Length: 120
Image (cartoon, rainbow, N blue to C red; front, top):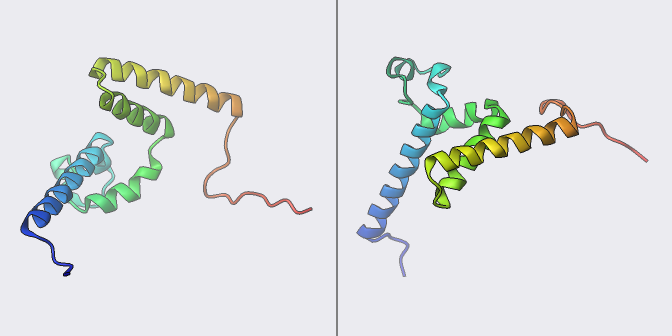
């Protein structure tokens, strides 16, 4: 038994990689990462043209959590068969619940600050 891929498997893998790249480039565009991207091509084209995965990894942590909640809720609602209008309404409700929970819990510590250790 060999570890070589069949031509069909190679085509499928290439197709999956191309779809993943297109998805991340689109996501980078939705969040307008090109506005702060150091790659001048992205700024000229007003779209992700460079290292799409590097940009995503670099800028995604800086996206406001409310925007991430909205985005994820929209995707989930669309996957469940809701219309775009319904998905947007569901996402707004999720963001409202998230904001209420945040208000109830109070401000969180910055991610860069290590948690305090408590010793017995």
